Image (cartoon, rainbow, N blue to C red; front, side):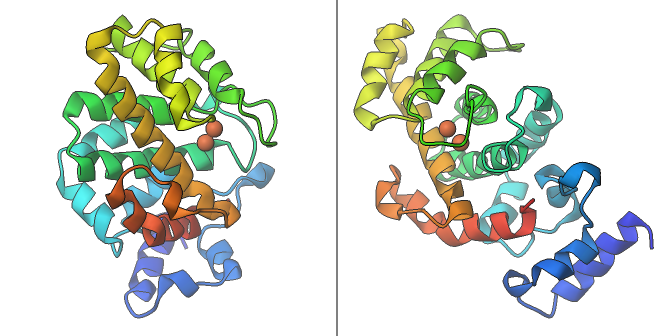
Length: 239
Ligand SMILES: [Fe+2]
Ligand SMILES: [Fe+2]
């Protein structure tokens, strides 16, 4: 059976069952692991195939102006810059981007704010050197951002993203000192704090992958309602 036919058949079967209870071996049958142990497809392919259609927030996202920008962000994602870890690698980043897009939609981010959040989500973990608890990896990621292609991102916006990424792995109270360190202009402080909250919530929601999400730590109240969504996204995309 061709790949497209397999996806179609899987969707057909899913109409009559709770996909959340799909056992792993059934998913392996539908989406066999690719060579090298990495499971294919990723989130963009699953989005295009309609595998998330039963998730309310994603259905809403697909109807919004945000969706095309999310797909574009996946298209331009420099996957070679991402960690190869199964915990903090491409799968995690793709899920954080999707969750970031949902958060941006829920919070009414402007198109520009949303694109900056997607960029921050894309590269927030490129400074990781292992999967251990490491408060410094956000700072290393932030420092590495300037070497990436930055289409349409101004120097002030880059400074905001760097401060938000640097702060994502530390206490919330650090955002203002990172804003100073990266030279965020006073008039951009609110943007900087907004991006930090969005990134932290998107990143934290994907803690469902290690069964360690405490919704009390989420910054936006609406993010607290996304736990089941994050769990469904993870189940459908796990590597
Ligand atoms: Fe991180
Ligand atoms: Fe992360």
